[in-house]
Amino acid sequence: MIVHPVERQRCASCERWQGERRPGDTPDSVLIEAETATGLCCGGPWDGSERRARSACGRWLRWSVLETK
Image (tube, rainbow, N blue to C red; front, side, top):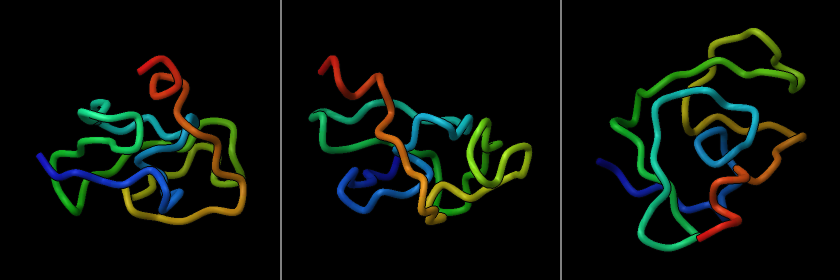
């Protein structure tokens, strides 16, 4: 799996992204399967659209699972 830093504020670490991912070893990272991983945006400005894990958006929200680490 690929480590994706939360500080980049991309889809992989956003609450609204529904792609395949796991929390990283620290609250500052997310693990994704591949650079090309995709998932649906649910509730954001791209609502219902398939987005890549590394896509950017002006309405990023930190994935709530990361808050508990």
